[in-house]
Image (cartoon, rainbow, N blue to C red; front, side, top):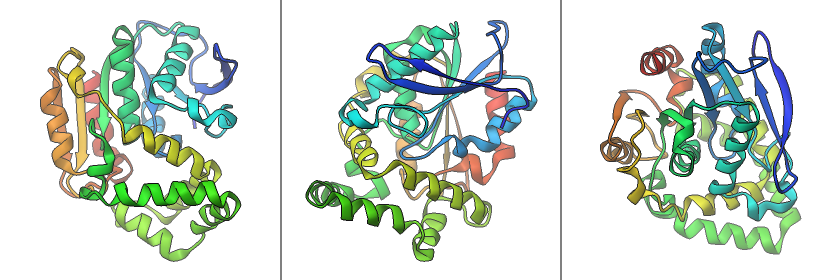
Length: 291
């Protein structure tokens, strides 16, 4: 992924091991640093085109896996997988690497993580890039309806009563061509994003399991950060796709209006993952913002 990289683990104060990957040996405060925060049951694969682009330009980049995700530990203590704890973990990595200031980039749920970092550790955040996210509880807004409010309790109940069956269904569903097509068509601009990109996404989604999804979705259902937004005196770039079928566009526009130092950029045919639909345009716009 990087021309040069160093992978390691950061040990938290509760003895979890958080995996991180960086493209610099020692941090240089005179150069911009980008920290990428991915979305709900996603991975750094969603940032593939941004990481390659900014690495080539010589930016310092920090990637990480949230606790309970992929190479990080924490899956056995799923209730500690909260936005506040995840923000604390990222701050811990930055402190360990002597990163005093960084641009935080968040996609979808990563927007919530980024906003939590800005709320709890404003001194760390030099700027925010917020893509396809919301500051409101998702149960009433996801897919522009309240359908998730009714589906979620049913699924959680099924997971608790029949964990083995539910996990088997979760893992195998992604192999269904119909499901792949629905994800490709609903979450992405199908004409612009390859099937291979979707295959990797679904494979990694299956690795995480339903427990991680529902724990984090419950976090997204109790977001309460609206009253803090007008106090975030941090330069911000809000990005969205006008064809986003997951998080309604008007919420992203409202987020941009509530942040005191914000710019916005919306792509007419962009989906919920515009950074994969139109990476060249998104990369140039982020570069302009950071510069």
